Amino acid sequence: MKIFQSILGSAVLLCASFIPVSAQWLHFPTPGIPRTPDGKPNLSAPAPKTPDGKPDLSGIWAGADDKYFRDLGTGGVEIPMLPWAEKLYKERKENLQKGHPSERCIGHGVTDYDTQVSLRRFVQTPGIIAILFEGYNHYRQIFLDGRALPKPTQPSYMGYSIGRWDGDTLVVDTSGLNDQGWLDMNGHPQTESTHITERFRRRDFGHIDLQLTYRRPNGVYQALERERTHELCSGRGAD
Image 1 (cartoon, rainbow, N blue to C red):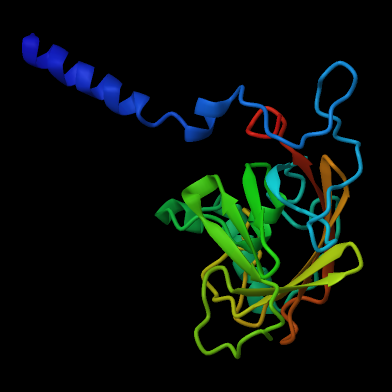
Image 2: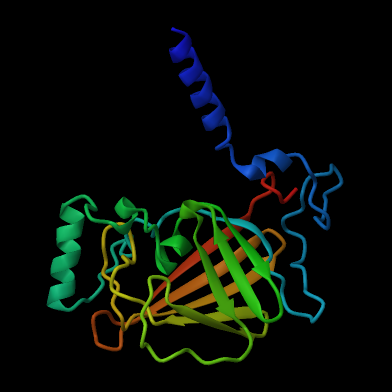
């Protein structure tokens, strides 16, 4: 019995250690948050700027919904595909997403992170933006230093991303992806020729509008566009 109690106590302590670190500062007010007269975060206040005058995307954000996370064709949009891609997509969908990379703890890719609701933190500097995802502890790097996209000699799961400012909109181009990722949970295939363009615009303090465009030079898909909104998470390090 004593041995059992000792094991049980150790298990409780171990589980307690898995509490998200962010919860330790749940009630610590983040400096610089605009407030309404009653003291609540004013999410419709003007979007903040960095010292160099660029829109500041920093903060903890979550998707407003997961409308396209399950399937980019949600809403009845027909997505033209080459026969092999359509066959693979139908097999994955009929098998209830069996074989998704998350089964092997690889996690999500660029597109399904963009379309899901889980938290992500933007860390912005003049030369680079890092996106830290709560799910699977993944991250992305978006380089803003003027470099070009690399030649696809070493495709990777998250690809390679560069960004530029078009007025108040951050335009991000990603290529160099491998064919291990899925574009959504139902299994639209990602290939090494996939090119993703994201347009991030922080329209006010509490919202980022995101336009996604997918292109396949080899004709797997024609250009496909989707629009998303990220919401600032007050109460998770943002209040």
